[in-house]
Image (cartoon, rainbow, N blue to C red; front, side):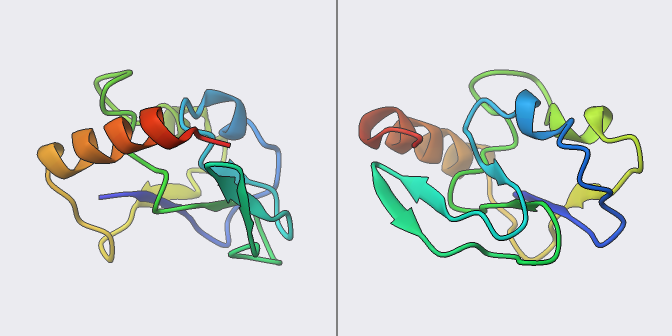
Length: 100
């Protein structure tokens, strides 16, 4: 399950620095994967790219962005539920193609 950032976000970007997968972007900023740029997922607030979020599996025991958020705007995304095996496979894919 990826995490998501809610409208309670104050755009402090404390979460962005904590993400080992470079899955968190400022509002309106395009995201990239394997060198390919994609359209921003939100123009309103900081967002998480579900295709890049592994809940920090392979790096940490739990998502690092959640405790970094001063407004509790980051939650687990019930629309993107994944098993640990799926998250590990996603991390391996990111290792292969590059996170940026």
